[in-house]
Image (cartoon, rainbow, N blue to C red):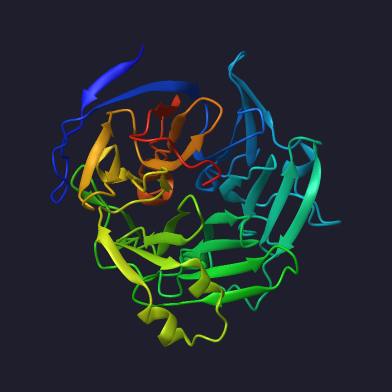
Amino acid sequence: MKKYILAFSMMIGINAYSQKTDYEVFATVEQSVANIAFTHQGDLVYSHHPFFNPTFRVVKYDAKTRTTKPFPNEEWNTPRETDDHYLSNVLGIRNDENGIVWMLDMGQRNPVTPKIVGWNTVTDKLERIYYLPETSVVPTSQPNDMVVDTKHGIFIIADEGIGSGGDGSTASLIIVDMKTGKTRRLLEGSRTTLPENKPTIIDGNPLAVNGKNLLVGCDGITADKNFEWVYYAPLNGTKLYRVKTTDLLNENLSETELDNRIETYSEKPNNGGLSIDDKGNLYLTAMESNSVAVVLAEDKSVHNIVTDEKLLWADGVSYNVADGYMYVSAAQVHLGAVFNNGQNLTKAPFYIFRFKPLAKGVPFR
């Protein structure tokens, strides 16, 4: 059943907002959903959250039968020792205008070189693999999300810096050239990629591992409709940043010169996923308040526009051009065993919501 709510603040710093937002539960599934992409026909393809060691890393959802099957197939979801043409663990997933679903394999669960795997959903064939060599990742890398910029021919990856026990201090951006496969690591441990000392607080409890607050670096990332600006932020932090794509591509800029060109765009809550509409409104998954928040383009004010008690740890948020909805997952990450003294407190079903954005969303990011 469709619901209509008046969005309201559930955390300090987010303002009340009077506009009604149409939202609904689109699907209930048996495993934690992380990030969401779409086939050329508008069908959902999503990653199972790797924190829960799923058998199938990525699946396709059939809305008619309400079932899933491994994506792109079972072979790609089956680790082996003979080669690395399989998905180790995937969080970030995006699609482009050519019907290619790009999957960001962090390479941690069954250790392999991190990579981006592109599967063409029109031809149902492997499009290309891009590897992230040691020059672009570090031992504590956790490539989390990405922008697929077909205008400039690059991927822009957000590296959280919390892999293998990392504390977020190596968070960075990674650029991958679609033509050559060349990679560049930028802004590692900079003011805009580092997490702030702002723990994630849910139901009054800080998210912690072995008594130490988890602070996550550069996480959510998106780009505007013309790929002019890239927006990004650490998960734990009060600021959202933006930088011109051309500045990221300018190899003549020093790290200091690049940093000086980055704008502090707005305030924000602790957030995971990030998306945008064609008016420049930014959508952030605000996991502390079971919400999706929006940063309004008109004045950069921040508001919760969707709030639901079932939206436990809102994670990925993506626009489906086929039906005009934004889709958002409820991953229940904070209820996982690593945060609860070894006890997995997650409970099925897991929810996928969808809602109408304030303006037409920007597809493919």
